[in-house]
Length: 66
Image (cartoon, rainbow, N blue to C red; front, side):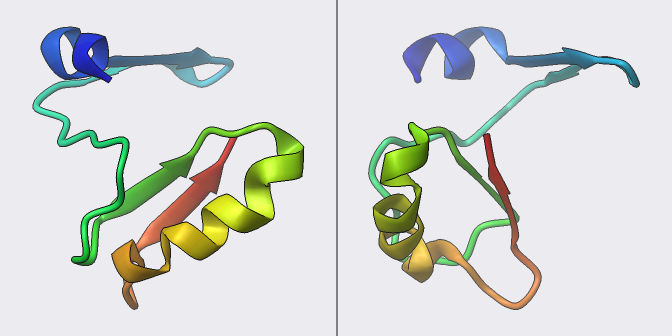
């Protein structure tokens, strides 16, 4: 997480390359709604990770599981 916060998040794919700067990234879920939540866990941990991020998810939150 420190590396992402320091150097930005780089996403590349068939639709282009993107860098996201000034990212507020955490390893423990804050208890407030976020704009976007990335779940980056192994498939067998997805259900428990989804349960843990519930306090972060609001009406307009986007959740991405990768």
